[in-house]
Length: 428
Ligand code: GLV
Ligand code: MN
Ligand code: MN
Ligand code: MN
Image (cartoon, rainbow, N blue to C red; front, side):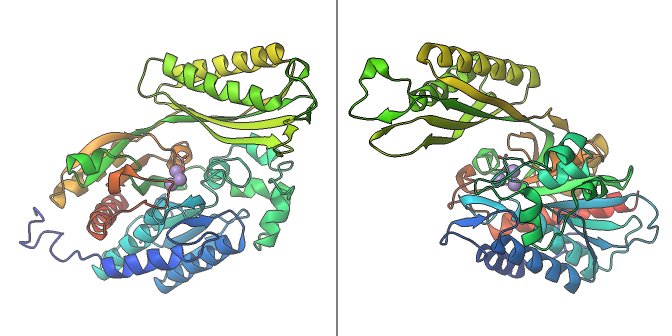
């Protein structure tokens, strides 16, 4: 079947685009910042409302709903051979401050629509199909990205470190989880680790968050690899003091040390010589934060990424050396230089890529193989399952800002490719 309207799969394969858009708009209303921006942070009331909303849809679809200790949510459609590894899909609905409606959300609500579509088409899965809503893909609250999927991948150090982390209001991870209804015993975190071979495949549908598909007029991106992200926390401390009374030679200004380090990050990134190396100082805080007080403390959080892990690590090493040098030159203390995560890249699995290509061809949708420069829960699911990702175009490549947008047609295409990919993998 060619899918060109003569009885191929696309002809009776109709995505409820209006319903999907309505759900996206409803979910966006659970936000701690005014529309069109969205702010939905881990374990806040809005996050809890979003969770309830997603579980409601899963229930309506007749999926068996389960939550693990940290609130990863699973909706399972049992296949005829439930003992086989399931085919899973999913993404996140947490949203960084003042972001948009589509990042992550398309991969959760779109996945649920893909399941609904398969049910409407009277498809009978052999391997079970599962939609996962991951807890805290975004690092907003505790500084740890992909928190739920990292734990699912069995990263023991994370299970340990979650015993001690606090948010910027000094709320511990377990207290925050408790306030969202997840009464954790920290020993429980091991229960989040996935059992071996739980999944035979994991596929994530996501907006591209880059401009390529839109610019080239291609409706589908098939992701072959996810770039390697890292993040660092740095603190400088100086003596502070009165902005009028302390003369310039007597100062050791922690704020200027941070400013100098921010510029050093840019310099080291550019020195890599590759357009694929990127670095961002997205957080820069000064204490006490008064116009007439010399900063006595500064705090930076630095994001560095590359498709080449070694090149990224070289940049991190240079940033470390600069931080040390700046602290010496300025007589400030480098009180912390901490690598929060330094993840390797992930490759998509050929079996999943083949299935995605098959699906796009069936649907007569042009596609392009590409890498993901953003990270996703797929980065960690790749450690425990063959992984692949489907990208759809988004307006001007905008993401992590309120202007983020994907059209209903593009979402429908992504949902169809996802549905067909899952169907195919379910029968293998
Ligand atoms: C995830 O949101 C990322 O920063 O890539
Ligand atoms: Mn994001
Ligand atoms: Mn995302
Ligand atoms: Mn992301």
